[in-house]
Amino acid sequence: MSVIELTRFRLRKHIPLDSWPSEVIAHPKELRAFVLCPENGTVYEIDAIKLQVSRRARAGDRATSMQLSPAGDAVWVLVPSPGALVEIPFKTMQPGRRISLPLAGHAFDLNGTRAAIASARHRGIMVASLETGAVERQIPAADEPSMIAFRKDGRYLFAASGPERSLSICDTATGRTVVRLPLPVEPRQFSMKPDGGQLFITGGGLDAVVIVYVYQTEIAETLLAGRAPGAMASMDTPAYLMVANPDTDTVTVLDLDNSGRLVASVQVGRGPRSIVVTPARDGQDQYALVLNETSGDLAVIRIKSLPARAEERRRPTPIFALIPVGEKPVSAAVMTFA
Image (cartoon, rainbow, N blue to C red; front, side, top):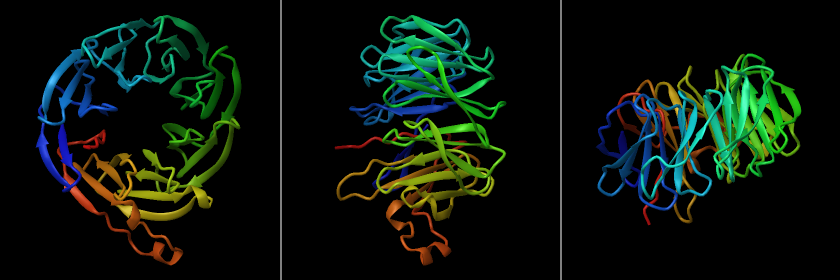
């Protein structure tokens, strides 16, 4: 794991781990981060002051993914075999509540007091209570649900099927399918707008982003977004959508307030895999951090440097900094020091 100092845009330290990491989550209030290593099913707590592993917890023999709890006081880890969701509270940093799942899950989302778990293998969705630890209902899927996400208010679930090229919208309380929307892409990536009003989908078959209005439960539009668009990150102010294009080593920036108009195509490192936008703070610049898996570096895009006028968009937009971080970076989290 690598630690980058964003005030000076330099590598501070490499922190050794026992296995290959896949995800990192920042503590919402304290200067700590949590890293998941799926091959040994372990979550590592990183002290952001001492820059070292402070504690660790093993959720299972292997793990699939993790998410911050809705209360911000724990991480939940999805374990594939036997299928379970395991809570690791920050206070104890020991496995706490365990929700046994009747089906092996591969993706999940959390909202309020509920978890939704997708099982592509068994073509089903499970809805579980984080309070009681019980699976409340199982929802059969028409085809393999490859990705899943709650609407911000928790009322509906969005489940995308890759083989079927569809998006199913389900009522969380009843499990009833409200609508099934055909997609022009084979969905591989989800990204929700920070305000929760739009869901962005990319995937194979079309060089575009599909935009879903989640409260109208309809597809709004499909925007061209460079070649083979992948990972995404969006902002509320300015209303930009940033899309990674691994095949061309670029990031495409679209203006959502202006009919998805192209703002810039920024050349970054090789194989951009993930994009993280730093929090907006008064008097400070805001940046998009692009993790380049193939070249092993972090490209920094200064939001204010993106072209504001149409004539400027014909010129290449330079990155602000390029920082070597180590082999195959795949996930990042930003922590703010007061």
